[in-house]
Image (cartoon, rainbow, N blue to C red):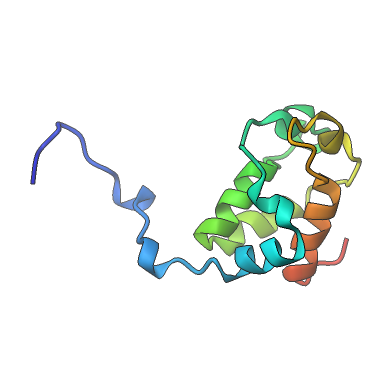
Length: 110
């Protein structure tokens, strides 16, 4: 193995074979826009709740892809469904419907 002078910390290492992305796949069936997100951060920058909490839609989608349930379930509780993120999305993703679909899949009432 080649030594490049750095290494990944064990806490940030992902075992791709062990990831449970079943909820993300279920989300994609319900809301195909889940794959359209480019992670630009416009939604996070415009978010009213994001100023006071750690709410970030791109982090929620990434956590769903990684199967990290506790990470995205905590963030979803902060969303006020105001719709500002939908107005600024350069890809035209209906983020409110996406968030409601995530809540539906995870059985969270909004």
